[in-house]
Image (cartoon, rainbow, N blue to C red; front, side, top):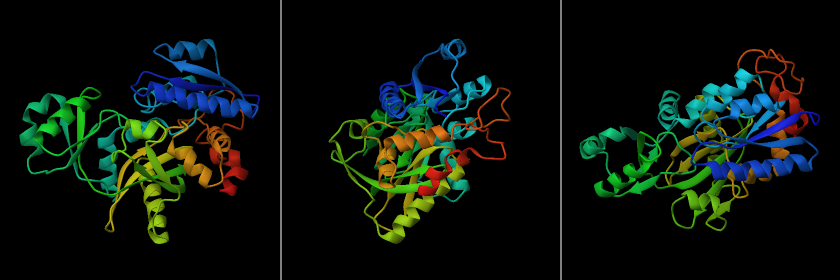
Length: 337
């Protein structure tokens, strides 16, 4: 493992570029401190040329948002036969698309808030489309992360404003029924829940600033739920990941836990943030994995997911179709969980 050249892919072309750089810097520091040969690879539109000119043995994907989290980068790495961390092409694309994710949730009986989708060119008919859907509503770009372009609407005027803001980031806008409840995130490793954390944003809304600026949110680990309900939330998160096709390495599932008996899954994150304020590292720490352990566990699961590699790859990085799965590359650590 430690004689492999690890490229940490960071930056990218999405609105989450700065978050990605913070994630990449943290991962680079953790791996180099543990003796790995790592290099930062800043992603731009010439990334295919960069990877051909300065070949790497394995890619640690520290990208977020479009062209990095949505299957595009995963597809390029499959073509170049470079094993990579995280989910494969299909799972990444589905999880990034909030509409397709919700459709699969419904198919697999995973509860999610009621919703509809409006295209940017339909905003002139928004009042008719919204109809009796009711308020408050929560608005999101269909394919975006980090709460960028999201907003709450309490009436038609606010709904128009929120949809116009979301349309800056996507041509399709998801409108959800706003549900009062606790914000809970479940961290997973290879589809197995590590634990759940409760987030209490001081502003009342878990927006971009609440996520990435220290002191903007309070956290409760484990989430303040009864043992029975806590176990149920972990099971729901695992079901949600299976619904989108599974997720290799680290993942996070965002859930609303209502005061009643209902839990609503909002989304699956196949490349969750690894910044100092990010939730997956906090949850992993509660399960006994410090940040370096988590990075190593994610790296150990790097693999190609489509067919067999035509390039010689160390047995430390088996493809998804090998008899020995990528999970076995770090058996001792996984058993410790």
